[in-house]
Image 1 (cartoon, helix red, strand yellow):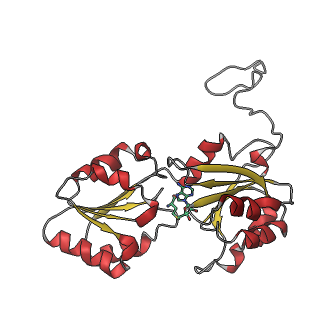
Image 2 (tube, helix red, strand yellow):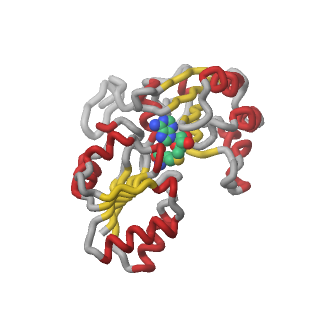
Length: 253
Ligand code: SAH
């Protein structure tokens, strides 16, 4: 059996209870390189076989899993954050399906959640934005044309950019072609929840220079949008005059 596990954003106590238990039971762990905090691996049994997938191809990962399966051993495939985002998980599960190897998936706390936490931010503020766009700048991995950053930027919604910290001049130019301006609030969160975390607030116009001054080129999320600063409307849910299925407001007749 193979368990895909979300390791969380980095802090060792931000893995789920289920994920931690599976790590403790694993006969083999294949972890996603430098993005996974190595301190998490101290949960593994002393006789657990530990492999770093950053040094492996998909074929080698599948071969290591197949080998363990033949010996009746359990593998944890440890992905950073939540496996469903930029995890290259589907290409693994499709192969396991073809091989008839059973698996399940344990979700994790994604880095975009940890980044908001470190900034005390809320992506969805009434009157400002009710949408969060999770995306990336096209790099060595292309992005479908209809999802080009310039296109997505037209919405002016809250945005979290993965895998883009090394391309901030291009990011700025693309964002400015949309609804954002030089003064739109932005933030760079490096290694959210790790001991060495850095959370830097800036604007769309100063993203590249802020990252350069701090020496940040990777393992960072770029957050953009008025949610980082602007004026918002109070929620209706907790307004005294608002009646819900659970609470009678002063608007009740
Ligand atoms: N599945 C992961 C994302 C993997 S892609 C998740 O859910 O978070 C790798 C990218 O995620 C990095 O380039 C960076 O943009 C972001 N990332 C991962 N961990 C991070 C962290 N702790 N802090 C900031 N960004 C992080």
